[in-house]
Image 1 (cartoon, chains in turn purple, red):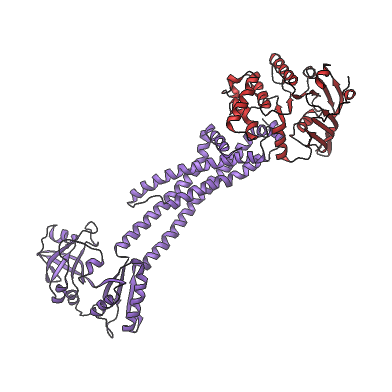
Image 2 (cartoon, each protein chain N blue to C red; image 1 turned 90 degrees about the horizontal axis):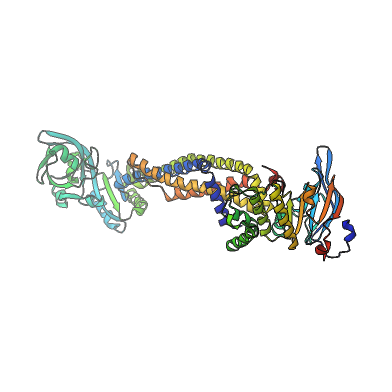
Length: 390
Length: 246
């Protein structure tokens, strides 16, 4: 007997008792749907986290000179270093950040004020909507220019600001020369809650002439590790003590997040997988009942020349058809649930291809695995006893 | 006339049972369902095997039908030794050589008449188009080709039994084995069925009929009577033996 015939037979048997087949499938549907939903949501959440962090720059390496008492690295050294390794680095910007009270007339606000170099905008993939960014001339001449974020505009200027307006930063008057494009819906403590000024001014505001933080950007996010090593070597050459400086990047953090979310996926997937196992046992149970109920049919088929493998394949295929059908319905239900829950949680979650393939494979495998025992029981029935049963 | 007296025939028999014993162990007692049976059936014969319940007729029918194998002894069917065969080989023999007609018709309730008749052909690996053609021919022979779409529960007992006969014929078997075929039929349909079996025999089919009913057995050309697992008589009846053995 051909497989296609066995399939037809299986489908007919399933359709012959719809309610029972559906209830048997239900376990598989729930199992598969939960595997797909959980894995989809975890993957959506992971992407959300990774996106958030990659906004912070996956191609940037931060250098922090923690102690400048004995040895120093000058801004010029850093620029020169980036220049010398231009095949690796896109550029570098000093980075002097503090929080200050800023004022417009009587309105005041505490915000991040970051002293930057002229390349900072480009290195961090930021945009300005009007005006210009901090220029080299501003830095050199310690010109009191600033570029402000949209949150600051909302809070200090009630949303209305023109280039050339003044703002007081820690008591000193700065002229607004540019406006940064909105980054994060103008929320407090976001990247819109910010003011950029020349790093030379920032250093003076901080009361120190030393610049101790630098942000390097590599051309390729994959070469971040190489860049870190290179910077490490270079700084060790100057500082002679690795306690005195720190070189960090997002890569390590991202790797940690990846490890954690993979662990979470396996954990949740494993829990959902248990429900697949339970569903498989349900199928095995119903197939055993079915074999007993159909003993007479098996006897008739055997008397007409059905061999063991014919009866075997009939039952295995029936079990497989039930479980894969349940699997397919489960994939559909799971996909819908993933999208709905994703929307509810505010993350972009979609069923992952891996989860779908895994769920489908497992459900088909369970059908074969758990259908085998009842099927071999059916195949081994003695035709005489089977014919005699009612 | 006793069967032994006509045995100058040297042709190879279709069925040859040699010293068949079927012994069951019931607790500590041994039950000899078949207690040394020797029987030859030639091609073209119509043999009735009769006996009361417990005479061993069901056991011998299972052995002849390749549904079971004897404890000891040899069963040669169409030149093949069936007595030592394993399950799948027996299935093959049943499929290719034997057509069963059961008392309870034994049609599959969830398949229509045509599909039921196609079953032995399905297991013989015959393709769909051929299957349908052969099965329809068999149904036509029984005069129920217009019922091919019906499910067994939509048919009368007589029609169901005709369906079962059509199924037995579909595989063009060497032997038709009928187990109490009239047991569930009224007298009129019984008569029709027996006439049909006779007709089949006249067309050259070998028929073995198992029954407890002597009047049914009388329809055959030869009656083998069993008691306590042994053959107690083997008679030629309806002495039209010229026709049978020429």
